[in-house]
Length: 143
Length: 143
Length: 143
Image 1 (cartoon, rainbow over the protein chains, first blue to last red):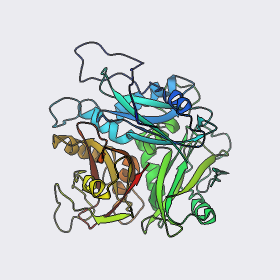
Image 2: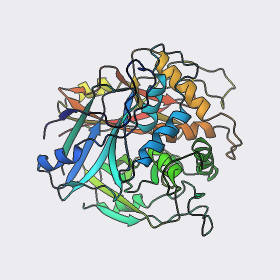
Image 3: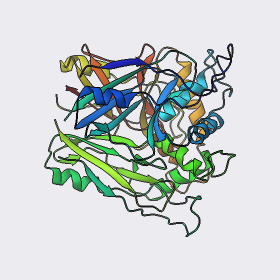
Image 4: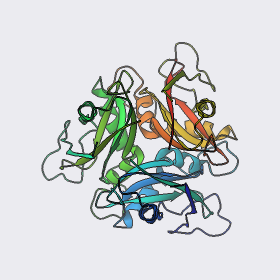
């Protein structure tokens, strides 16, 4: 199956216009990876997901109670303050740092034509410097 | 080789009964991945490990001196306090956040029928909300 | 293609002799992975990178403005202080912890004979306890 690129629309809190450098969107968008897996026809294999951005990321966490991703973002924003004497002049250093903490690549097993996730797990696209148009690369490979 | 699921028993500090939401177990259990690799018969390839839980994780770090994983847990617990005004009412938000920081998937090369780890490296199952029965998925693929 | 091992030379700030346990080198070395991809002859596939050390790591972030990796290191050093009551007596617990936060394995798509990175992305070898001679394992696989 060829690489699938797509625009991950950003759900969650949208911060106001002009507040470019203060990101309050949360790591909340479950990207439509499951659909790509099912249309790939692959029954047994793996699914790789990659975010080609430096102020966003990917994580797997609980997809049932929306307070979980909200707490994750709240705490990430405490761990990495928006302003902390950074030298990078674009005002989004915190977003870069959070991207390196959660990472931009994931590999998930595919079995029975579906992602082999735990009961509560979902994939989250983490927007740390939005809202923006973003891309996510997904590839499903049979093994 | 098919997916191998297994229950990762939790070594390390076991916190007392009733202290469900205060996790003091440490990222200490080296899961028996090496044995799965050797029984797979794969000589050259890769080994993927995946934790299907949202309050646990996987990491690779020093497997020689037990103070290293103890320090990792101590510091993670400082970085992500157990109580910090979280909204998730199950009392284990800190565990979810730590899971996203260390991650739940790993890929390690296999060569000569063994994991290609550094001299001091070991794989650690990170229990952030135990003790519980947990599963770890392991798949070894020849290339 | 067989595994490629190499010594990742460390660019960036070099701390003085004798300050072994106070790491000021930054996550700055873009390892020469792109060259390995091009010489592999693989056009479509993946590239896996693995660091076999427990006080170093790998991350993908902005490779244009050098203040970005500098800010990442500065903030990691705030999040994980060099001295914080650690029990590990080698004095490099902070480096171990940072390694677990950023991780040691990466998987990047290869397409058209090149790494499929975003416009601003580069691969960084993160030296948290240098300077030292280090190895990085790289494997390119066609799919």
